[in-house]
Amino acid sequence: MSEIRLQVKNVSKSFGITKALQDVSFDIAKGEIHALIGENGSGKSTLTNSLTGIYQKDSGQFILDGVEVNPRNQVEANNEGISIIVQELGTLDGLTVAENIFLGHENKFVKCGIKNTGAMNRKATELLKEYGFERIKASDMIEHYNFEDRKLVEIVKATYFNPKIVVIDETTTALSGEGREELYKQMKRIREAGNTVIFISHDLPEVLRLSDTITVLRDGVYIDTVKSSDVDEDGLKKLMVGREVSGEYYRADYGERVSDEVVMRVKNVTVPGLISNVSFDLHRGEILGFGGLSESGMHEIGKACFGASFDREGTVELQDGTQINDIPTAIAHSIAYTSKDRDNESLVMNQSIRDNICLPSLKTLANKLHLLRDGKLKKFAQQFAATMSTKMESVDQFASNLSGGNKQKVVLARWIGKDSDILLLDSPTRGIDVKVKQDIYQLMDKMRKEGKSIVMISEELMELIGMCDRIIIMKDGEINGEIMRDKDMDENTLIAKMV
Ligand code: ADP
Ligand code: MG
Image: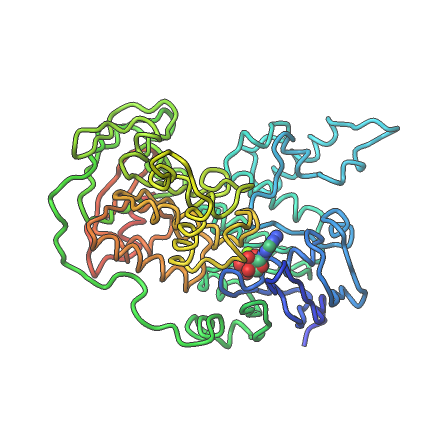
């Protein structure tokens, strides 16, 4: 048995009536990648956030190399040799890239009471270069960068000082292939240096491939710790949900004919710098997939069809001739959109789950006098939060307090409540565990059968293959191929058109 790095001893933490962690104990070794898995809301983030000073545990101990640690914030955690790449956005607007990397450690660059910005930028530039992220400039404001690049900055921030433990909380789902490879490389580097990675991911093949050891949590309770070489995916799923996961995962039908009826006609849509001259028809009851590399422009398709793109050219036309050029028109015509970046674009974090779910449906929820009754809103929100089995205390809770997968459920609940006819879903299962993924796939299949039309944009090729009637592959902002649903389609068919 290798040497112990961290002992988690009887750790408990509650939020109101939610027992997020109940008396959790297990050991993590030096020089290993230790995965932490469990369904959404099982307590993974609560555990790692407590370890890294973001939350304060209620009771129990963290013992690092034989000494109890109790960081009150992330800077103290860093000083103990513990860092984290958080699940949500972990960089701060209004600061430069360099300031974000050295946040809380600026005193390294202070001489005689004066902050030496030049030295800080030089050091940050050096690090970015070392990591191969030269295209990110140390002196730029962080908000100039997209979600993925900001995650890359976080990788640098969390690992440059060779901490004893680096926590990586569901970061891979936010990254494209290239970003993932970079992260994997860093994880292995940390292990080689004899340090420890605590790795949280819902991607079980990824977990099995990368980690040495896996600990499973379920509903805040410790279930088991296993060696990766001793388990397979089905075994892990069983540990996570506490029973065999059976039944169809994706939709099961093949060879069904999609209706000829066109519900949305997209013609010559161009968004400068992102997509050019994209045209396609969306049919009634169709699930139309968009795949490609993350920079292929595919993430702009959903926005463009929702009337949310800046500077869009070309037309998006509905069956009745309505032109979609702005979001209010899209919503009024029963179009839904969920963004890949759900924190910034989909949810209003500092509002309740209730308000988030009711937002697009307010018009229909108002009475004849255009008044909104609290009770009615609450009931509506409860109904659709329950449809998605959202794990929460109540619909009055802030959206920001939900776990990542549950945020996604709230986003979907909102649009199901609105009874949308066309759903533009960008990365609908990003960061969501197997059980909820299956729920979402089944829901999509049900909606399709009801004659609703879905655009599914995804970086996960398997779910595109499993769910779509047709897949359009994007490359460099243009359509580079179209593939029809087929039993024999495999990932390589798609990849060939992506790169
Ligand atoms: P995981 O990371 O495994 O998906 P979390 O640790 O985020 O799960 O959440 C565990 C439980 O604690 C969930 O029921 C979640 O709603 C709740 N929870 C997490 N953070 C907060 C918070 N800040 N306020 C209230 N409840 C929270
Ligand atoms: Mg989490």
